[in-house]
Length: 362
Ligand SMILES: Nc1ncnc2c1ncn2[C@@H]1O[C@H](COP(=O)(O)OP(=O)(O)OP(=O)(O)O)[C@@H](O)[C@H]1O
Ligand SMILES: [Mg+2]
Picture 1 (tube, rainbow, N blue to C red):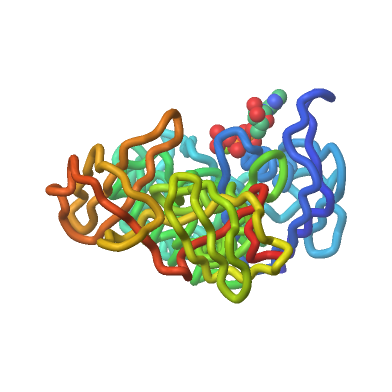
Picture 2: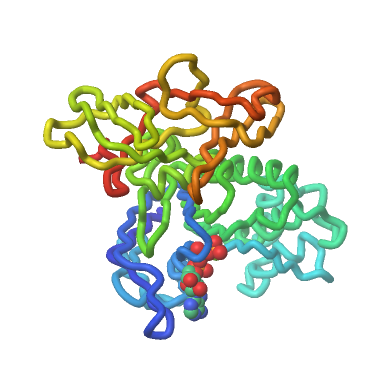
């Protein structure tokens, strides 16, 4: 088991600083849930409330049907792994992992078995007799995870566990975590990260936190393909989705939009006659823009190009303080710099937002 239910949970620090409201979330045992959101939106706060390290100001937290608001952290069946892995420097990997079990006065056999099993799961068997200083950052982080595994909790909480690692180690350790999760299909994991790729690849479901609440919960591809609002649309995906203001000029099975800068858009989103004339923003991801010789969404001069090898990013000249429109084209296109280009997108890639909310959801 390891079902976690949050009902109308809120958090106010020190009686005045309100950081989270109306958090309703049901997590099923065995799920890997990822929390993402802008810095300061309350991801760590929510995790710490589930762990019992932070008091819940309002609402209820249930684990496997039992109210946990006032249950001490050690009795919640939870282990938490932080960004900074504070290992005991003078203890071997084996002793670091065994420490909590020794405190709990488990037998030698039991401790050995748990440590060896955790080491096997985390590919640390060959390092058990080393001191932490003789390990790479990724291996140390795995030892920190190993310390929590030996206690066999129902629920694992990770707060940006890989953010201290360099790029290559992040990828390697991320894959270890994915593998670990597969080995423990009935254990629940809640994982906070700033890294889009980690969120997209690890999560069964992603929870996007913003403006003191939940902006959307869904599978990674749901959030990418059908964001409910502009917040999620621009937060998931990199570079962020382009937004262009306009008005609805045609409704029905497809929607036509006249853009303020003169372009025309057709979206697969269905609208009703009463939507005619509504002010909207259309959203198009950089990877869905393509150059055209005909009419398009916008025409702009390419200010900067960034060739990343497999793709080239085109940054268009901005008008005023608007963020630059960005296109991501497959291949190398350095020659586009300084050129005037018209960009378009297929109707199925054109999102429509009215007052920040997607017209797909009504
Ligand atoms: N002990 C505290 N007292 C008062 N305010 C706090 C306290 N801890 C956190 N906060 C505030 O609560 C908000 C949420 O903080 P939290 O650490 O949960 O954000 P986060 O989403 O984890 O951010 P990051 O991505 O930067 O780690 C922030 O505005 C922060 O300043
Ligand atoms: Mg945090």
